Image (cartoon, rainbow, N blue to C red; front, side, top):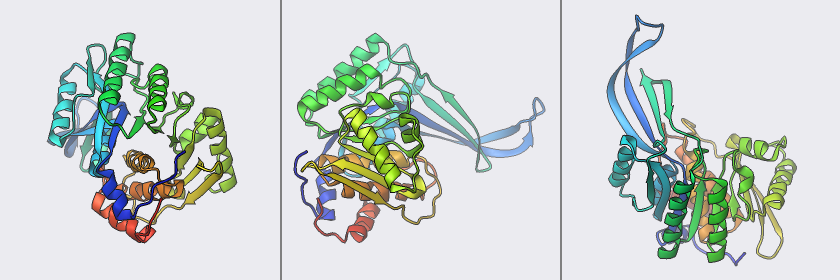
Length: 344
């Protein structure tokens, strides 16, 4: 690993603006129907929601793109959606947010993942998932890999994020080929995994499971309150999958990071969770991987990666629903945390 670069907190966030981030994985439309409930249906014992508001938002890996953009970097999102009406909705949402569409492939053989949440009297009453979890077919895989290779060859990509939601876009073939391509070009890679392909992410730079994913992926009973248990689990992960940096997010227990340092030593850091008024944890993982990946691209030490991404993940949990991180507030709190001293 190359020597880390030194910045003040202010300088680090300014440097984010020079980065291009290739984001791969499952994207979706998060659709909301809001209304009032005043009676029960005569047809079945279920409430009737009289809809008075509708809202569509970008979800999945697209939310990582929103976080990357909010932090000042340039997101290059690459995914596969359906050639359907919801795919049109997704592309319109990209346009509204000023996100590029040239990395999006469309398929006649799979739907655009859409999660419809029905909210009555300010309470979520039902969620409907319209999706497939089937892996990309051979034609879709070739189209997707060609698109990724084109972006890597034509853009100065600084880091690649794999955002896996188990919807079939990140197949074993896609994962292995992109990692090999990234390593050939010297591009660092970061992963936000799910159980299905957990062990397929070998030879990556940074691997970020949450506690549940870590336990399921390694089939180990990891104790989040025991540093030795955490360090041992992440060491096992690093050895099995040749991962340079492993960072586990632990909800109320903060984050734990373990890295093979540039001088062949081992760095371990436990960053406690910040005391906050937690409203909604939705999307916190997207924010964490976004901040961690930008720090990784700028060759920051593992303690800085963990501290800033942990801080950012806590900030978005104060809001209802999935929202990108507030850059200015993150800068302000990062200065207090790190005292705007030189970091690396």
